[in-house]
Length: 222
Length: 271
Image 1 (tube, chains in turn cyan, purple):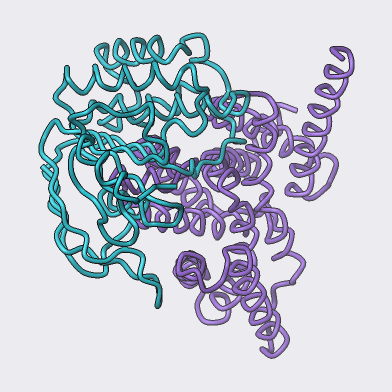
Image 2 (cartoon, chains in turn brown, yellow):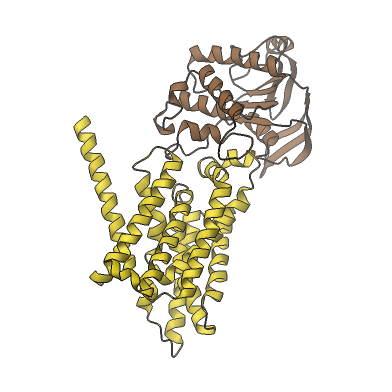
């Protein structure tokens, strides 16, 4: 589904990523971990087309991508409602969503426990609530590849666990490929998930099971 | 007051006023809420030079002014996206240079029979049929552009990275928005004036965002309030013998102050 081939990224003289090669199959879940400034976000920015590699090649066979950026680079003080933000994630850029899309939005609002906020102004929402809205924006395009860059950073711990369970269910049900950047693997992982440990280069790539061993050999992530 | 409507110049003024108010209110949220409010002001200064160059060389100054201002707007957009100069500074530089060029030409060319004052404040009552057609034309172009690109422009306004991720050609739409703003400004400068045309772009969103929490509401209320204010402005400016542009700007300001006052009173009574 996705292949990174000898990817290298440099900003000026600074080498952010080098020699990055790995492969991810359809329906798999990949956790990207690594210390701060190790190039995790750069790795996904390449995939979503916000950045071009200095050299190397990425082969991405996804038809529809959903993306939750780490830094919500949005102007949240604008007059705009939750409804408007969610609609802006629809696949077809039409003015009105279809009936099926409306039902999908309603079900996601229920899952995220924010149906009552649909007509609210974005600027009145808490950080966690805003993040759930942006997550729905990413999910309503019904992506076959979902990219989440630290999606739980603003979510409270009680919702975090629920969120991951929901994500696993969704992944199984829709055969969705998920790429997940995190600095906290503890509540996010199932044994058969893939893990990549990045620190400018790939320090580890394999299943979560094998990652335990790698960690015990003395590599710790931040 | 109704007998005023029988005069051609009032009819032209009303049609031009409505077309310009509609165009400006439609562009307003995508510029003002994207921290580009000053682009209209900068382009108005550029069009001052463009129109003077036009008057100097040919009889129809717009043939020179329109391409001149559109090029300047693309240049401002280019400077601000190339990240060598920030957007505000790019607007400041280009507008000051153009204004300086315009003033030097006026001073140096003999037989220039148009007063600087008329260029600065404009006069909607001396507008021609051609001005009217151009105003309606630009309004129609802007209406179709906003209607067909609304969702893309909205996404670009609040989250440019997500817009890029969604495969929206943000560069193309940015340039189209700047180009249309330039076109609108050149047409509007002759009737509303160099100094005041930007108010038509800035006020609608500032006023409407006080009254609504949605983006669509901001757009709609901006359009409605602009149309009302421009029509009232034209009707009262004539008997009062005040410049139309200035009258409209003052009406906008009064409305904004009134809204802010009501909001303040409401807030006090709640707390």
